[in-house]
Amino acid sequence: MRILSVALATFLALPVPAAEHREEVLRDSPAAYWRFDDALDCCAQEATDKRALKADRGENVSLIAPGPRAPKFPNFDAHNVAADFTEVKSGAFLRVADPGARSEFDFQKDTTITIEAWVQCRALGEGRLVYIISKGRTGNPGTKAGNQSWALCLRGARSAKGAVACPSFLFRDAKNDGDRSWHRWTTTRGFPPGEEWHHLVVSYTFGKPGSAKAWVNGVALDGAWDLGGATTLEPVLDDDEVWIGGSMGGAAENQFPGAIDEVAVYRAALTQERIARHAQREGPLPELAAVTSADPVPPAPPKP
Ligand SMILES: [Ca+2]
Ligand SMILES: [Ca+2]
Image 1 (cartoon, rainbow, N blue to C red):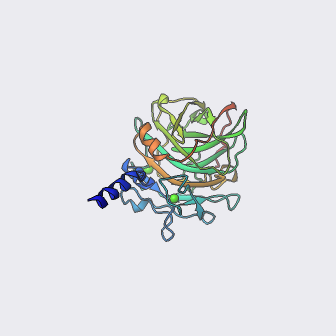
Image 2: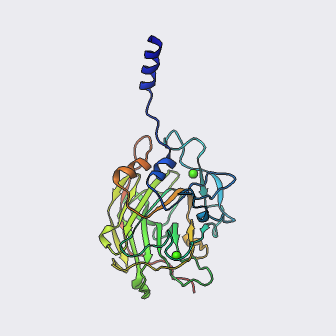
Image 3: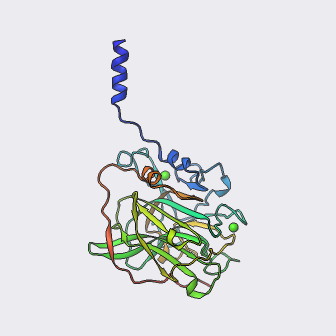
């Protein structure tokens, strides 16, 4: 009995093991989720066995880079792997086919998109817009220029403490009316580029301009619409691909300057409590800084 008591006391004294990040993500029913962990099936998509949403590996993407790892990131093991897009200057991205009309990648008016990723953004100049994951604007044959259904990007800006990277949500409305049809919402605080891993979430309900929200490392951030301003219109809808880590045919300017891991797309909002669970880390949160330069910088003109 005494042995049992000692064993029980020892057991109770152990820290509660953190749920794996994978479990936390799947608990929130993503429409698509890529982890980049399986050496034999590196770009598998893990939400609800939808193997059709597997990413095609780009020639220039490294899939042996370290991702966020334990013990600093307790929801990950010590071998977690990420996708690194920095081996070449351009053309490094992963592509995922859109299964067709009204697919899990198509968002109509009054539908909510939430996009999540861990990122290690090593450097980012002021005014640059680099792509984490997006649908459309690939430059693929047969697609319309500027067909950006949705995108999670980082935008480079200046703060009193130096360069910062700000999460940015970008789309083009279905009206397709020149520059007025670009809509971009960017946070007014950002994190300094470097080797640190950051957990990002953006969420938006199409048709509801006030619904745009972003979180960095579980902290909710304010933001503002620029380019064509806010809109109640729905996004461009088509069957162009989803790309991770690049855009516009692999344009160097928009290439993600670092590594990306654990990318998920949801067709619902996540609560603050759930986002905090996904963003778990040990030690103090990385400091964020307010943007001091916020001149709108339009995206590069679409390629014909
Ligand atoms: Ca991973
Ligand atoms: Ca589609």
